[in-house]
Length: 80
Image (cartoon, rainbow, N blue to C red):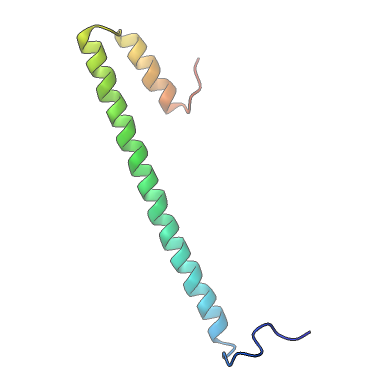
């Protein structure tokens, strides 16, 4: 069986280093994407809390209802 990279003049030591570099770059961008998703989720949660506080202030919702909605959001949608 011939080596896949036999036609290229790439030294054997360069292949693991290239794999580590590409893995690091992919991991870096994955970390950035995870952090961005987490920031967006936190911002949306804060916006929901503000909206619920406004509903409670105007009297169209009770504090118990708002608390139940916020608690359901924290538990991943599990209602008791």
